[in-house]
Amino acid sequence: QVQLVESGGGSVQAGGSLKLSCAASGNIARRCGMGWYRQAPGNGREEVSTIMGDGTTRYAYSVKGRFTISQDNAKNTLYLQMNSLKTEDAAVYYCRADLCPGGMRWVYWGQGTQVTVSS
Image (cartoon, rainbow, N blue to C red; front, side, top):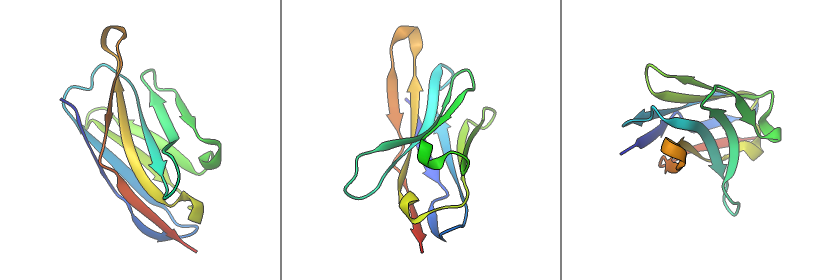
């Protein structure tokens, strides 16, 4: 069983920075991707950034150049460095892990961490 625990959320003024962490427990050796999603009130959950199993990364257009995704394989931890935060970045941020053993896909979610950005 895989568990994902996010941390690092909080309140920050526009222009500030936060770094989110997602600690994974369980066997994630066969992950094909890990990423960050967010959901603001009244909106659906949207992808922010994903790092694929081969290390390639992708970002939502709205965060390109401001956010950086990274991982520490030794610590089984995923990070999201968020700089130049905007009020529209405020949301609950979720960590997601996709495990792909033998052509199947299993998706796991964390419980979320709140990011508040004030003007």
